[in-house]
Image (cartoon, rainbow, N blue to C red; front, side):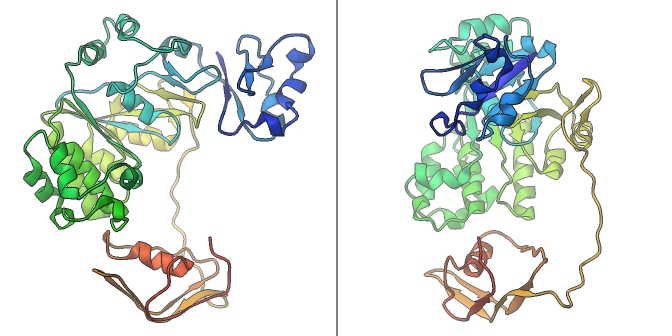
Length: 403
């Protein structure tokens, strides 16, 4: 089976010579393998395409992908975003009393799968031409399968779900007001006080979300709290530990694990240690970013992690990535390395926070890490080094351009 993908965010046909049409051998032979659509972007016929890859190599914007997939996946198509659009094959399966994990790279449909299971998107089963998908063909397709009862409950509005979104940094643009008011308005379980205490966010309750004074880690905790205070049947946590330090990750993992004993929980997570701690079973996802994603059948968590690191699905005989190996390397010799940045003792004062930095230097070729709990000034320190903000006291000397 061959699929053709046109990345609409990259395709700019007004600025090219339509190489995808000009150099296609089937078009030269008289077939309409590639034609221009009404939106000014090419439409590629997957039935006529021979998979030569010429259009892929000739496109100046790298907007075309031609991919060969296993024929059996044709029957597992769950959702397609238009002609030559992204495709999702198969779905994860929620289990009551268990935390189910999803592991895979970004851009291959993990969030789309979650939105489908949450009822926010009705799967079109590849029938993308229908303007308003309905639940009837979905129920017919999943009859006799594990997900039938799940979709039946969604179609009858007998299942409540909550989704903790991935991009918590966008929260201040969407949500306004004090954190206390936001969480209380979301509370349907009367667990506001318990959740706040468990997450340790009582000091944040009187802060305004939209003022930009809340760190990424704090936004993550608030977002998790907003999900936990709801009384629903199924909880989705999309990357719940990003922005969090190790102590906060363990705290959040324990809370989610406790929740999963009574409820259905699905977690998308890149931190393998957290995934191992949280989940019993994990669905690996593989695919090509922006083109397609495939959800594998569930594996025991350790087996799934080892399989993911190996980049090879033994049961399916599919190589989906390069094997990840870990190497130890000795520290570099610092003598003779050019000094790029040097700084005195720095102080940065805010209305309710003061950051103090001891003097230091950064040399060419060094990879410097910054370790510490959230909300103690790591980002502020980096912004001072980058020149985004100026220290209240102290000076920074540069011998480079900074991005």
